[in-house]
Amino acid sequence: MKITPIRGTHDFFGQQVLKYRAIQDLISHYSRIYNFEEIITPIFESTDLFKKPLGENSDVVLKEMYTFKDKNEDLITLRPEYTTPMIRAAISNNLLEKLPKKLYGIGPMFRRERPQKGRYRQFNQINFEILGTHDVSSDIELIILANSFLQNLLPDKKINLFINSLGDKDTLSKFSSALSKYFREKKEKLSEESQNKIISNPIRILDSKDPMDVEINLNAPKISDFYSNEANEKFSNIQKILKDMSIDFSINKNLVRGLDYYCHTVFEFKTLDLGSQDTLIGGGRYDGLTKLLGGPDIPGVGWAGGIERLIMLMDDIKSLQKKIHLIIINESFREYGLKVANQLRKENINIHFDYKYNLKKSLSYANQLGVRYAIIIGEEEVQKNICTLKDLNSNVQEKKTIENIIKDLS
Ligand code: AMP
Image (cartoon, rainbow, N blue to C red; front, top):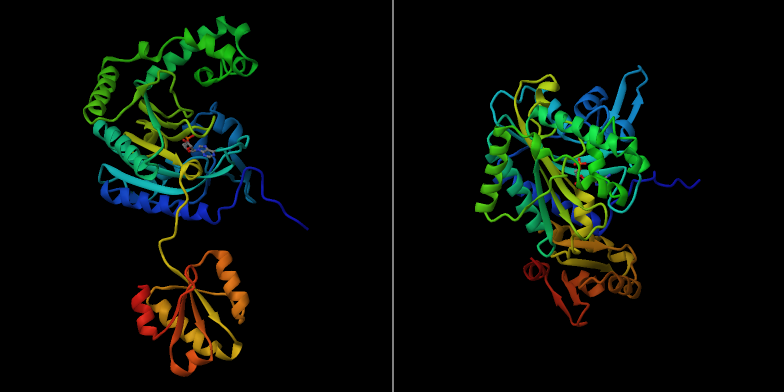
């Protein structure tokens, strides 16, 4: 019986794992210097947690959630995103007494999307959230954190930052009604997919890449016509600070993000190197969300980044640690060889033992792996309590005490 992986899932190994860990290390570094606390939540939650906050008509809720009934008939969903579970956890554990609360998390998310390059059904996200402040400094800090992280991780890649404002709470609903009206008048000219969204989710039509829709979108109502004075001021402020801090960005008036809970600032970091799945990090402000989830009426802002897409853009990682191939040429020297390995590993030296007990086979295997050094244990080594250290690049070999080998390799 051959069991194949589930569509849209993938295994991490070799370089992908090294890159995944490098991302984690860099994220830990940024979380420390920006003072975010890590939170780890279950991968499944009650379905109610997602339905309303993400929007009953959002693509995620309508089509993409992995929802199933537990044996006791409870509806359970594999988390499709991390902001709502993080806030749920902050509320459940009374973490919102001292504000602002800065939380981050890393882990798998699940969406039943059509798999393609950069789009999977199980994928990993990094999330940063700041709960409890309206201050635009928190929006700015999160954007700068994302920008610094991306520059550090992908120094040679061109990544563009797009920002927009969705205005106050009612801006989006007024905008949505105006869009519905506009698209109803143009219904015949829209693609079939967009026609289906006119009533349920007209904002999503703005994302369409269909040439017929793109043309009609050009003259669609603009969200900025629905801003309050305060929203306008907030957005100008953000732009001014980003300019002062020399962060390059463009305004994209069609950037509305897929989930219902956003307001005011929204942003995306995009690459030109990944084809259509080009957003690396996306985020924004979600001021009513914590209250909606049964918590205090506090604002929030955050972002999520996709680890798979970052991994696809990273250069290969070369291990800096020297790997030493242990060659015990005959089973009768096993005990001494294992003792030597033990001593070297206590000094944090990476010893790879291949259990072959055959000099020729072991050397050929070490060469195939591209290992630079081998330690060879034979009769003379055991009798004199020494080792032979061989450089497999130059083929130079020397007999040494274990202490000297440790000195050379540390
Ligand atoms: P979102 O929660 O949709 O704003 O997504 C945030 C980030 O997660 C995106 O910018 C992507 O980098 C990543 N992402 C979202 N959906 C997927 C997916 N299906 N497969 C891989 N990465 C994804």
